[in-house]
Image 1 (cartoon, one colour):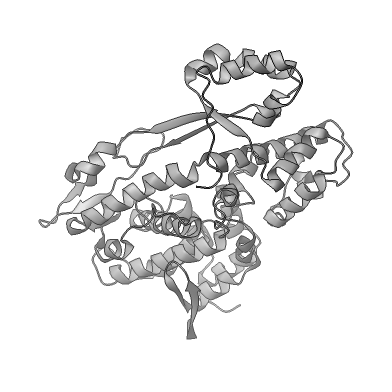
Image 2 (cartoon, rainbow, N blue to C red; image 1 turned 180 degrees about the horizontal axis):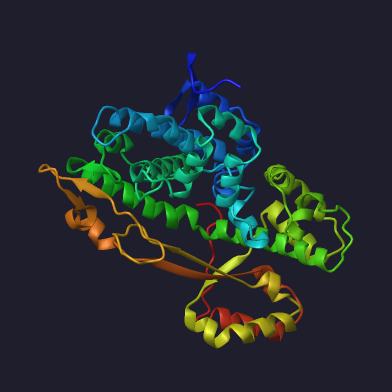
Length: 441
């Protein structure tokens, strides 16, 4: 086995709609891209069910991972030769940037909830296990794969390196905000990345921003805030996720009850048993999931039939917003009424909550300690961003949460159980105002 890394005889270039070009100069990176585990990311969408809301959102985790690599490459060019930057960490940073999402599965978050898996665990497994990725990484030394995994896991001792891939302003976020904005067609996620990269500086513990770049960082933070509420938490996307989760839950329950499937869920068998191997995980992608959804439309179970048909043909649930008081006072009765109306609330009455904290300063002892963004002042001292920016100070530490209740509206309008359905409507819409999600944003 050849050791170390060599420069490619000729630079490889990928055309990219966000960064224009992605430059590959290292044999190590080129070979990592060619592994089966990395190529699998071409078959997993970056934004899960968002394509049912924004029809352009068909981009993949492969696209995004390449973009994060390219931003990291540019950051390193800015850092080269500056104090606190160790050039021998270059390939470690580039590898971690490229591989940071390699453990994501199909419709990652919905799948994880149903089968209690964790994409971060699978990322470590792919990087350190018996894989093509691991074989390529070990050219740099036996400990190199573990170092890459540690950077992604945020346990690597060099905090500067960790901050470049995982912080409140990092290569990962700077790519997905711009890339997701581009493919969804919205204007919210755009900010002056070139300016941010030019004024980014290495320190002992993290990458910081020269104070002259403060306004570009403000724009970045507001872009993130808008993308979360206008794109990532869009109610149509969440409705599709709810249905997707319910399909997987229904299949799992039918399997536990001994149901004989018309199309046996072979790829899910070990997941049902909680005994899945790395190979089982790598064999799952979104094309496999969609194949089963197509087949399960013809199962005898009416709930599985209906849910699959809804997802495939975009007949999604509607929603109504609610408060915590609603849950305390009306939830149990609402479930009872759904059952009286012949609608199973376990699959057709679903609570979904979204929350986001756009920026926070350091709060010691909290469950998730966030490293704040620091500005490098002319006198060489660091100032936490919200102490200099009135705009950022106004949103710092302010967590926004919203709750929605999803249900099949057309079934409440269908004949039968009219009195019960009217009671349901009265509970859902006490002011007789129904909320309709936009079908396209």
